[in-house]
Each structure stands twice: as structure tokens, then as C-alpha cells.
Length: 130
Image (cartoon, rainbow, N blue to C red):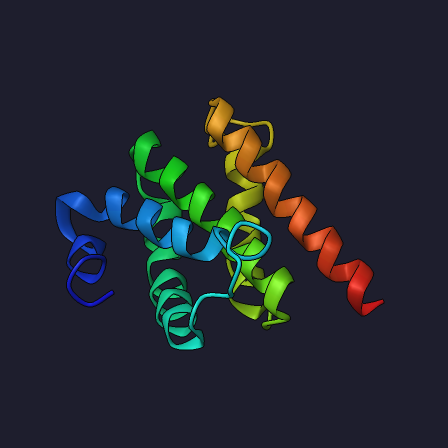
């Protein structure tokens, strides 16, 4: 993580870093036979929570799309591991603005898919807890 992903989380390559983090968060069971190491998930979670607000408020659509993909992947991770949704609650309004109707909306298929996966993970988590 420290050698391959962390250097990508700032500067011009942060979009690539966001997608790398999204991959770490997304690929859990049933994609992996064994769950990822808890230490790796903790590092990815912490880095994603730190990076997500910056990505979502960026003016470039490509960067916003990376943020939406990261939010969806983080939601999947939280649903699979029963982690707190508090970090995503903090950016939920911005996510809604980017995928809903209006001037701020990101018009792309990836934004629609991210919204679908985010809501799917949230509803899965809600079903488990309630």
C-alpha cells in the first residue's frame, strides 16, 4: 500500500489513486476467497475517507467520477464489514448533488453506476441492521 497506492493519492495522479483505493474497497467476498487483511482495509478506509471530499468537490468531471466510484466502493466495504457509515454520511449531500438532477450533476454512465452501487450497499447494510 505504502509503495504503490499512497504516492498516487495526491497531485496529478490522484484520480488513479482513487480508483486503486476503490479496487481495494470493492474486491471482498465473493470476489476473493480470503478476505483482505484487516490492516490493508484500515489503510484504504482511512485514505479514502481523507481523499473523498476533495475528489467530490473538484471541478473536473473525471476527478468527480473517481470520487463517486470511490464512494460506491467504500459503501460496499462498509456494508460487507459492518463499519460505521459516518464518513459517508458526511459527504452524502455532495454525492446526491453529483448524481441527481441539476447543474452540479455529473452526466456519465459511471456516475449513474456509482449511485446504483452506493444505494445498493446502503440498502444491504440497512437490511442487516434493521
